[in-house]
Length: 112
Image (cartoon, rainbow, N blue to C red; front, side, top):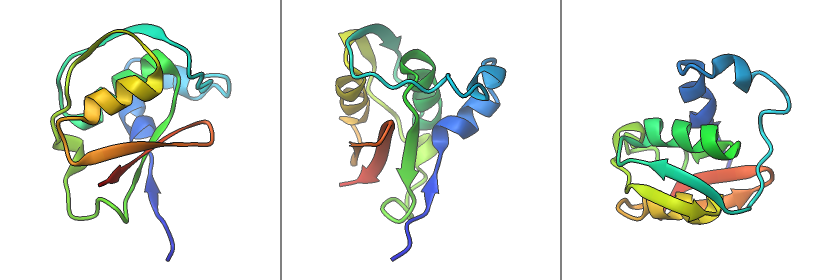
C-alpha cells in the first residue's frame, strides 16, 4: 500500500515568519538533545510549526493512518521545560489519539 505523507511542518512554516529559513538546507538538523521550549496548547498544525521552529525537526503526518481526522485542528497539550524533541512531541500528542514515531531525520505522526 502506497503511503502518502503530508509534511505539516513545511506547510505551516510556509505561512510563518520563518518561511525563508525553512528553505535553507541546513534548517533541518534534528538532534535528540534536551532543549528549553515552551509551546502552549494550540491546534496541532500550529503546534507542529512551533515545534519545528524550536527543534529543527521536521514532522510529517501519515495520511493513510489519519485519513478520517482533521488533524490540523486537534488540540495539543502544552509543553514547557528542558525536553528532548521526542519527549516534547509525545507530550504534545498525549491528549489526542495520535502518536509520533521517529523516522530518519525527524518524526511522523500516526493514529494509534
